[in-house]
Length: 377
Image 1: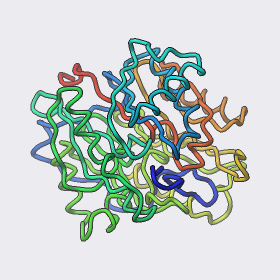
Image 2 (image 1 turned 120 degrees about the vertical axis):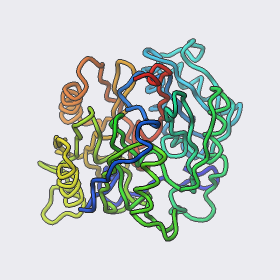
Image 3 (image 1 turned 135 degrees about the vertical axis):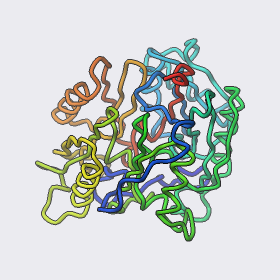
Image 4 (image 1 turned 30 degrees about the vertical axis):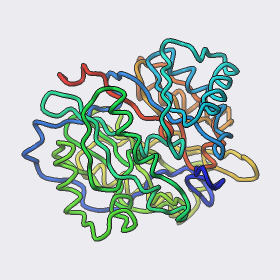
């Protein structure tokens, strides 16, 4: 959401559910000589904190969900909240109070850091363990390839990783490639999964080839396998982030969404269903185990119908939060499935249809910081 225009971050024509894309494309990369010195911890590994950028004027409708999410996270670990102005902080404190939380909880740390949006997964830091120390990477951010128009500001968003690195005392590395963290899935060992249609978008990286991207990803993340899926879901102006279609749940297993039942995308010859099926085939061909996560129902919100895709979950220390669709049957079924994916963690389903209507869920809004203990893992 822009501070200058009341536009949604993403626009979806039917389901607003697929935050990433897929068609068959080269999946497996060869070993990298840098693989032993750089590692990106997986999201399920111990975390130091969760970060988020509190929504401003044009994203204020998300505030209730932000407050509920904040209350849950603060029960388990530190929560760092960025606020762009004193009035936004005041609104945030009141919202957390209304949600039954304490804005002065010692686990909540407030930072007066400017941002342009409330989607910190995309413009926030990438944390890497490099040569025995934690570092922040700042990949370039240009507001999703400028897909929402030339008047959408993003300069403050692009500075956020630098500000975060300064706040936590970590060195920062600037990566001169445009990409969003919502399009990166790591298994914490040797593999990154992403959608080529995002990083290969010429509005982001002109004349960038898949071979160049593969080499860059190996070098910057220390991975030996790069699994590319490909395809732009219908209506997705981000070109299809991975965190709505395929997620690692352990080092060798990926959950991939599946259109079935009463979902709109379950219709015959549906493009989004084809994207999902091709993604599953690509990931399986890369030697990974695939579990299909059903999209099996719909939900109505402000005159629009959305498919119930629960893939956009956030994992933390002892908990998982996913988007809820105010559909008791599918919400309950999703909670039970995610409990099986992440045994031993408490699973929460938070209704956040206003965010979903803008094109994202709890994972899109948050950014996780690995614990220092992951350096030795």
